[in-house]
Image (cartoon, rainbow, N blue to C red):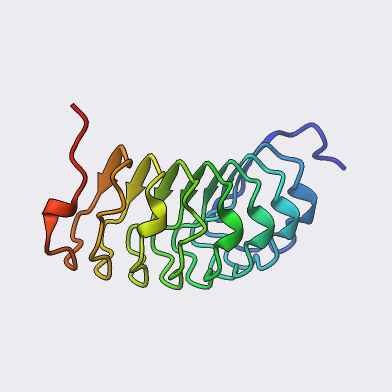
Length: 168
């Protein structure tokens, strides 16, 4: 293809983009605000993929091998069970996400403003975890190995004695 040698592409705000099937060879791809995109099945080999505010995307099952994946504010994304091998995963503002039990091996995980998330017991191996504005989270006792933990506005947590002690 004409883009055969291209490794990094930023199409942020290109709202007319629909077909991304020819972009799977890229190393870095930014499709922020590309709201017309629905099918991202060809993008599983991209190393860094930003799909922030791609509101048409629902099926992310093919993206499990992406190293750094941003799905911030993608309201149709619900099933994230295939994303357990992603190194850095941003699901902030994905209001449809509820079950995060498959994400325990993600190194950096952002679940800020995922109001449906309640059970975080499987996330004890995550190194950096943002649960800010997750009012349903009440029990963080399983997060003892998390190195950086953000709990801003987690109004459901009443007992902070269960919050892991900081390393000294």
